[in-house]
Structures are given as C-alpha cells and as structure tokens.
Image (cartoon, rainbow, N blue to C red; front, side, top):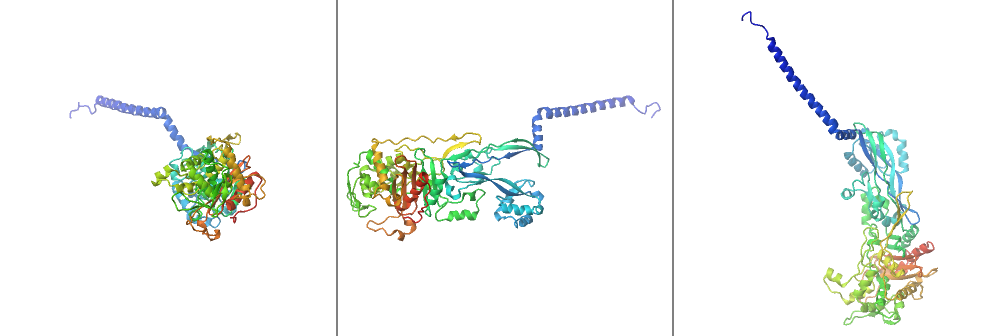
Length: 625
C-alpha cells in the first residue's frame, strides 16, 4: 500500500453514520408513533371498556335478597312469618383441617351426615375465603354452647338471618303451604334477575299461588375489594323491595275449630262466606308440619310422610274427589222444580225400592222398609232415595248434568290456590267419549242420589252450598282478601272475577228447597235433628249424605257398622249454611269412612258454624256415628 492512501474514509463514515441515524430515527419515530397511537386508542377509544374492567377488579356487586312478605288471616293473625334464625358458617381457608374441625364441632352442635354432604358440595362451588353454612336454624342452646367454645374454632362464625315460620303448623298446612329451596328445575323457569340471591320459593298453597306478590325484588350492595376479591368497604347500597303482605279471607279461629272438630277422621272441612266467596276455613286431615320443608326435609321424614296410609301430603279439600251422596238432592230438586217435572205438594209412595221397566233389579232406598207417602220437602229432610229415583227418571241425565254444572259441579271453581281438581258430573257425551258406551237408565238413578260416576271435591260442595244459601248469587271462592306493599301503604283489596248468577223461572222454588233443608235440622223426623239441633240458638239449613264405598248385593243386608273393615265403610258428608234466613257461612264436611252423614259429619259442621256465629264448642266428634 502506498503512503499516499488514506487510512480512513471520513466522508464515507459520516455518510454511513448519517444514514444509520436516519434509519434509526425513522424506526424510533414509527415505534413512538405506534405507541402513542396505541395509548390514544386505549385511553380514548377503549376508555369505557378498560375503566369498567378496572372497576370490576376493584369492586364487586353483592346481591341482597328481599324479605318475603307475611301472611295474615282476616283479623290480622299471622299465618306465615319470618323469624330470626342462626346459621353456622365455615371459612375454609381459615381452617387447617376441616374434617377434624367438624368432628370436634359435633360435640357442641348436631352435625348430620347430610349437613356434611351439603357443605362439601357448596365448598366445591364457592371461593374458599367465603363463609359456607354447615348448619341452619341452630337452637339457642347450640348457639350458647358454640359461643362458649368459640376460641377453639377459628374460621367459624354464627350469622343471624330469617327463616320462614308457620305458627299454625299442621292446622293450616295445606291451605298456607310452604316454601322450599330453589332447585335446578326452578332455575330454568324463574326470572333470574328477580331471584338472584334468593334461596327459597313457594311450593304449595298460598305460598305458591301468590308467589309473585310474596317474593319481592332483590337489592344490591357495591363493595370495594382487593385483588383477591375480599371486601374492603361498601361503596353504595340499593335496598331490596320486600314482598307484599297478604291478608286472607281465612279466620284462624274457625280454621282451628274445624281441624279439631274432624278429630281422628281423615277428611276435609271447607267453610265459605256465601256473600263474598271468601274461604273462612279449609282443612285437610291428616296433615303435616310445613316447617319440615323450609330448609329441606330429611329423606327419612319425607319417606315417612309418603308411606303414611292416610296420605297427609294429599290436599283433600282441593284434590279429593268423593261421591257427594244425598247432599246433591237439593240441587236435583231445584232442577225438577224449574223444569216443572214435579209438583212439590204431590205425595209419592216410597216402599223402600224401585224397579225400572223391564228389569227385575230392585234399586233400594237406604231405609229398606221405605218411608211411606212423601212430598218433596219430606223427601229432602228424610232423604228418600226412592222419591229421587222417580224424580231422576222424569228429569233425565241431560237436565241433571246441565243444572249440576250451574252449581259448579264437575268444573274447577277457579279458586286462587294450586292443583284444584274438577270432580266429575257425568253425561252422555262424557261416557261415550271415555268409555265408548251409551248411557243406561240405571246410571241416571245412581247419579240423582250422588253415586255412580259422580264425584266432587269438598270445595265444590261448599260452593254448591253457598249457591243454595244465596239463591244462586254466590261469588267465586277465593282466599286472598287484600295485599299491602309496605307498612306505610294502604291495603289493595282483591276482587274475585264476577260470577254469573243462577236464575230460575220461579224464585219461589228456592224457598221450597231452603225450607226443606231447614227441616233436615229442625223437623222431628229430619235426618240430622237428633245430632245437630240440640241446643241450637239459630236456624240452620243443611243436608246429610252417605256415600257408598263398597256396594252390596241386591238382597244383601248391610252389616253392623263396627263389623265393616274401615276401608269399606261409607263416607260421611254434610253440607249446611246459617243463619238460614241471612246466611253468613256455608260449610261442607267430608269424613272418610265415617259412616252416617248426619251422625258423624253433622256435628262437625255444627261446631264449625258455632265457631263462626257464637264461639267454639268443646264437643269432639271422634267417635260419633
């Protein structure tokens, strides 16, 4: 290399350096521009989204469930209440050995295997820093024993809350119903927003039918939390809207008397206010303790109820379907009078049986020797089957069906309670459609005395009686009288749907039948005179009924009552209203396998009406026949 050749090319180096600087500057400018653009996008365009995410990391909304509305009777007596209750909770992350803790805890608080299973199921679904209940509804004794030993149980706390309570217990269980835990099936049909945070829902009775009023709406609490989700402080609070308080038409005193009056009989008592349609009492017996279902009934107790021979969970008032027996005779008499099929004053011979043309079969009266000569009034208060057999032959099944339907038989009443059955008022069309058979004349004879295919619920019989009491102007049965949203609001009166009155061509026909029903009680030969009229201070109108459970052969003599196996004994029925000239109460009684309607069901109806008009009677009817 010559000495004239330069060691460095400073011009080229400056050029290269400037070029590299420009490239680096451009790259840096692009990167800074991109960063600024991204920051602007995040801060301006996505500001709302990231602010919300930031708040969600910092805050948590806690749902506050509403307090369930109370249920009162017509006089303000509480029928369903919310009582303070204590529950024991475990915070899993604060307990080193949960199984050992539960074993030690069982020395002071009763912990069942079911309680443990529910606890572990909940622990798998909830964060470990939140309290999980291990026992609900601790007794005062259990609370005291735990508090004394509290220092030995870190991570366990007792919390106060509310639980549903039914002061009348089994006396009003079928009527008021009960609440139970919300299941997965419920979650699929209920309003998620309205039931957020709630654990219970109405299952039966008023609790179920008026759930929309009783439940209320949830509130919320906005909490500031740390990164782990633990609450630090409350930021805001929206109070829940409590459920409405309901006032029922039911009278707790009459309800209790009706329950006691049934004694050891399985059956039902339904009492209505004839003018308003309000249910004064509705008893189904045997019954059950509704509080068992509130926090989940044990499998053992539930199976015990299912296995009970008299089905205590079955609501006989709404679902029981019984042959109405002779209680239907006043309606059949009105039908015949309205159609001019009979002369109420004409006397008919009752030899104790009747035969259809061309048949050798004898359709017997309940009184084998017969009643002799009878007019309509005597046929009702002495309950002659033969007289009504002849009446039914003249009337025919088509007319019988039409008039019975006017009185609400064979159709649901529309009461504001769930699971009401319709009973059955048979007709030609019904038999042809269900059995593909024609209607036979003998079936008309069975139907006119309330037997055969015919069936009715106790509620339908009470409504039928209310129609007789008001001369066809009875209102639709209902249990809700009024509701109130809070203690400062006024009551909102419930108005049941208007009912179409029953109109007869001659209004005097009502008087003929009501006079006969009074004679059932007050006439010397009335079927209920001996059992009901003694010491009565008011006029009552009624009708007894005895519904056959097992049929007898044509010439077979009925055995003595005590000789009949219980399940084959006749049902005892009685319907009545009082005072006869200005009715304030209409009652229907069904005593399953109770024997005679007058002797068994009649005294029960008397006690219920006394409770409404005078006060309770102390006479029990457990052994009355």
